[in-house]
Image (cartoon, rainbow, N blue to C red; front, side, top):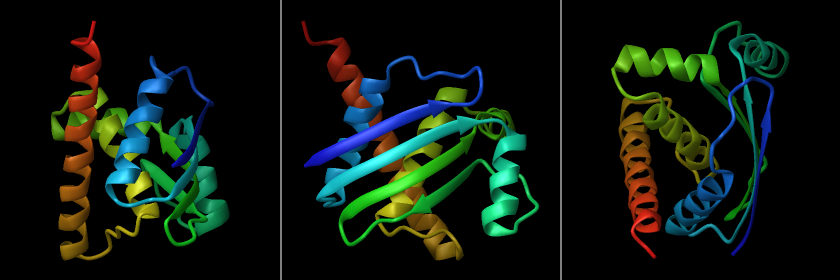
Length: 149
């Protein structure tokens, strides 16, 4: 599968290992039968994401992620904006480590491109189940890399 994942930073936050995220996202996409993937993740603060939310969605609310999805069929193509501020606050509220919440949010954007929705209670449950599968895959891949000599 052709896979391209780029990361941009409009905040002090930076992923420690971008390639690890690229590998993991590629495996997640393959798990859901994607045939290609072109993603750009932009990490920003609440103010910048709110501006996008107002400009493009006409929503005057803070959110952790906005997915601009141009996927056609199984060819995943999207720009995904993430508020690092909101991810930190949500991690504190849900009493989970920041890294775990970040992985969940990053996978959430990809899952939207793969057809998952989160408007109804049923859709939310399906999205959470898919997020958990991606989170588990992240940890399997990370542990595999640590134990290979």
